[in-house]
Length: 249
Image 1: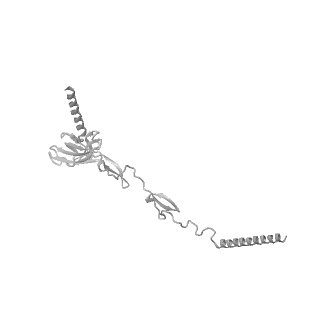
Image 2: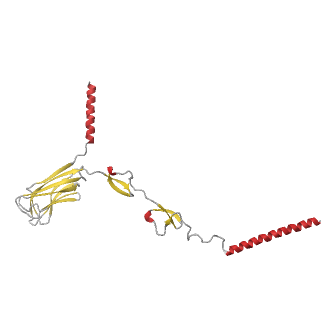
């Protein structure tokens, strides 16, 4: 019975472990607050960092939905802007002290960098007295892979891969052409106007006449043939004379 109970406990633990491993990645987020009692005095047009928050390394590079709310006190200072920055993106809350006790909402999407920074751009009154609340909710971006598709390297999701895709780098397609009387392999974009399709055809680079086909060669041939005939006749005459000499003895 004890071994059976241990087996059941072990089985339940295994199921819980598999379930935990198969759960999707949970969205993460965070918040940042600038107290409404914040007061800054500075020249018009100057910038001042009101808050700076380091981002959890697990969230860096994630796309996050940002919800921000500017809060003003009873004083009015037109032209004061708050700028939220992270990575290369920004969200701006404009004229947050345009009226007493006014609320200024703003939202947007940021791909988080190492920090979230809130900066004040001072208006003409040279005074800021207010605060801000910020919350962000992040969703993990799908991992992209690079593949070679139709001769080009493209970034896609894993489940978008086709059977015809291959791993980079893309293979180089070569074609055979005839250049200067020789067959060479080149890339299609390297083809010249003077190139022709393979195989090569006899052209200007070959002699127009075959060797020994001119008039001089014909004459030389006739002379040679005459010499052969003359030589043969002389051989026959010589043999005949030799025969007569032998018979007369």
